[in-house]
Length: 446
Image 1 (cartoon, one colour):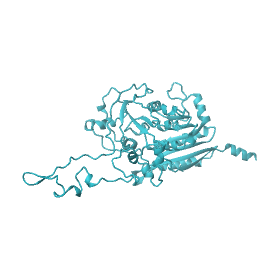
Image 2 (cartoon, helix red, strand yellow):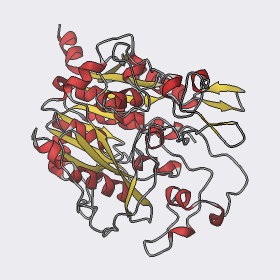
Image 3 (cartoon, one colour):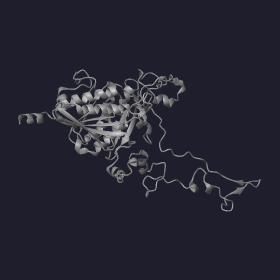
Image 4 (tube, one colour):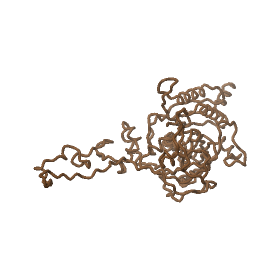
């Protein structure tokens, strides 16, 4: 089920005993299950959503590492950052943008593709000749006895054919089998896993799978990878800057931003989600130490007007951090936060309040994915969340005040540094927030 779907009234889900054990493990929900309860008691709900990143990532193993505070299974995924040579090789031919975004085409360069490719033809699979097939098919397999002396006659005078054993074709990806590695203390989110190679080109992210709509921030979405690609391709825009991310989720985009930026405030809501984000930052701190960047996980609720500064709250803001946010933030980023109209309204209200409180102008980068659905109201395929986003974006530009907003679409011509499926439905928008108070005062004086 795609993220943009509304909850529908369907027949009750099947009982847990009717589901395979692997499906039970993947379909764990936040139903108040504690770590002491059996995994067999988990049921799958029809209104659960699962990110395509976790379903379509090639040759990936999703390893279950622990249970979070609410009893949800937490999985570990690794995302490899392509080297400079690999990125340049993918962008040699601008007419093959689809092949650059295909995970399988990336796999073929590593020798893991299920199809053999001709090095002289970019992206063109070469079928095995019938003579070399393992399936015994093709006209060349039916050889006459005059041409093939290996054929023998049985006692009745019939030809005795020995057929090779059929082998299943390679599917291009490994079977996804969740494995319980360990169960860590849910009160110790800073404790990293032992399997941390600290590779400079691999980012490790803990996440959940098959969550309800209100918990989609615990998964990794294509919009986060798409925005991270842009950030890695434009280091001059983010180098040495103070960046604020709205709806940071698992923290993947903030971590990669901190490899070039000075400081990143990764914000979201929910104690369990923020704890998972902080854990991911701890797992990948070696990536940020090379550039001297840092990520601070803080709570920022779009439905609240003020920042949480209560010192008793775990992810609250200090006075120094609030001052640093308003005085030094020059870039705001948000990845795949457009899927609910009410949250989209709250997002734009928060964006306007933040930009109006900053001491100088800033740029906002928003990545979105158009999720097309068939609606009974329109009796056609449409994307209501995307249309509402454009409506709010236009309203933001029409506002009159000390800050003027100008929005423009960013062409997706930047190289792809992460392995995922880059679709045409992915878009990146840049919103420039510019102060005009000083200009108006100057014109009035003259």
